[in-house]
Image 1 (cartoon, helix red, strand yellow):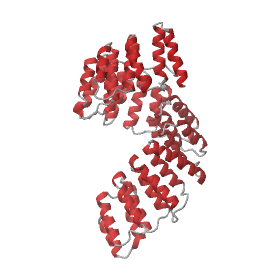
Image 2 (cartoon, rainbow, N blue to C red; image 1 turned 180 degrees about the vertical axis):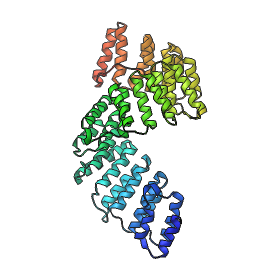
Image 3 (spheres, rainbow, N blue to C red; image 1 turned 90 degrees about the vertical axis):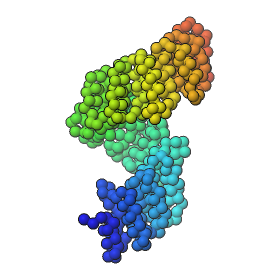
Image 4 (cartoon, rainbow, N blue to C red; image 1 turned 45 degrees about the vertical axis):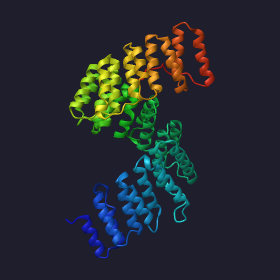
Length: 477
């Protein structure tokens, strides 16, 4: 069988023109050419004078955009050379930017503005236009993208497409990424024709923003709908972290049985979620059984099981599993080291934890605030508060709120009022809006019989407009 390049040349030589050639450059996704082959096809298009043809341009842009970040510049080059740009071509280019990741959100917004300003383009775009632009803003997730996404939402309302299921799903994911779960839920509730993606996006939005109870409640609501909206693999992956955080045993067990019933592939994300959920419900043996059966255990699956052991005080088992992971040739990342250090802290394995911390550089993992906070917690739980303070003071960068928070937690655990006041002094500057910091210090004053100081801290909360915490303050790791 001749190559695609040979076929394309034959078509052109035979006078097939652009609309025949688009069948080659718009191949099905499962057979799209690699970058090298695509470049060869593109060169044939250029030498044949068809680059300006909108059909050929759309095919080339789509193929280049499918390559992701590696192809987006070439896609834009083809787009810019097209003599006529219809809505489809604009949308294909916008989709390319959305797929290319956070670094291309600005280009997507600029292209959308150009589209609206162009006399040759549909002024408002269509539902796909808004979907792709919102997705690009969600991928970036920064303040600029947040403002742009809200502006695009307003334009979608004006265009009458904001309640379309595709646009609505993109907006739910966008607002969730920005941390505005209330806005995400408002959009979710307004979309009448919800599909499984709608439910998955909202459940994931709740879970990713720490609203685990709401995520579990929404999962229950989804299940009550029965056949009208059946959960899929993505639903389980989105919901399981919330089930673990809320120790929702019934929903976790349902998710596992549903995955078995539907013969879902137990990939890294699903295995990790099941391990975390069973561990949160105290069923470590079941969690380990899932780990043992996971195909091609990845770093994420190892981290979940290590964290499961650590949260139950099984530091030795967590360390042994970490060593097994290294022996298997799997490189740890920063999150994995957090799990191991936390396991050592909960298991009282100070020397082992310090050794693990010392090896991070050997694995090419940068030590961040969270890792230093875990070491402070490690030393603090063991009652080595002076050593913990010395560790904080020797850090190569300014200690952040997580580090000082871990130290405050250790002081509370061991009733060290003097050091607690020092840690709290820094926290009330670095983390002034966190009610848990005030509550921890005020409680320590209460326990020490220093009522005036406790009242002063609570008065400071009221003056600063800080609301009381919903739950007790917890240590970092």
